Length: 238
Ligand code: ADP
Ligand code: UDP
Image (cartoon, rainbow, N blue to C red; front, side, top):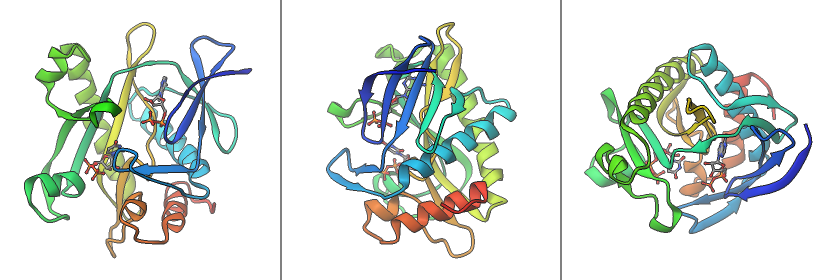
C-alpha cells in the first residue's frame, strides 16, 4: 500500500490517503493537548504506545462482535484503517464518576455507578465540543435515528468487553470516548482510537491514575503510566 498526501493533521494523529480509496493511513504523534487545546505538550513514546494499544483493543472488540475500522498495523506508529465518514459525535461512556461528570454534578470522583451512563458531545473544536442529547443530534442532522440506536448498542457492547478485559488486568475502566464512522455502504463501525489518551484507567488496588489525567493535572510520571498500560494490555515493555 502506497502512502499518499496528508489529508488531515489533528492534535494527536495525522491521516494520509493511500492508493486504495477505501483505505487511510493513520500516523500517531507524541503531541498531547488538553482543555480544548489550551494545554500543549509532548509525551515521549505516546504515539507508538497508542497505536499498538488501539490496534490491540480493536482486534479484541472485533472478536466480540464490534465492527471496527482496523485493517493492518504497518509499524510502530502507522496503521491502515478503513476510510469512514466520521459521525461528528464524541460518545462517552462512564462506569465511575470522574472528570467533567464530577465537576458538572458536584460529586466526588470514584463513585461506582449501578449502570453505565452514555453522553454525546458535538465534535466541533470551534464550539468546544458542546454536550448534546440524541434529539439535538437528530435536529443537527449529525446522524439518523437508526444510526444513533446502533451507535448506542455498539458503545455499550464495547464497554462490557473492555470492562471485563481491563478487570482481568487489575485496571478499573472509569470512562472513555469513542468515535464511530460510516463505511461507503453505510455500515457503522468503531473508528479513531482507544488508548490512555481517550480512556480513564485506574489501578484496581492502588487507584493510581494510568492515563492522560497525569498530563492534564501535572501529576508526573506520565510516560511511565502509558508504558504500564502497554504492559498490562499487551504484555510487552515499551
Ligand atoms: P482531532 O481531530 O480531535 O485533533 P486526531 O489528532 O486524533 O484528533 O486526528 C485524527 C482524525 O481522524 C480525527 O478527526 C478522527 O475523527 C479521524 N478519523 C479517525 N478514524 C478515521 C477513519 N477510519 N476514517 C476517517 N477519519 C478518521
Ligand atoms: N475524552 C476524550 N476526548 C475529548 C473529551 C473526553 O478522549 O475530547 C475522554 C476522556 O479521556 C475521558 C472521557 O472521555 O476518558 C470523559 O471525559 P470528561 O467528559 O470527563 O472530560 P475531561 O474531564 O477529560 O475534560
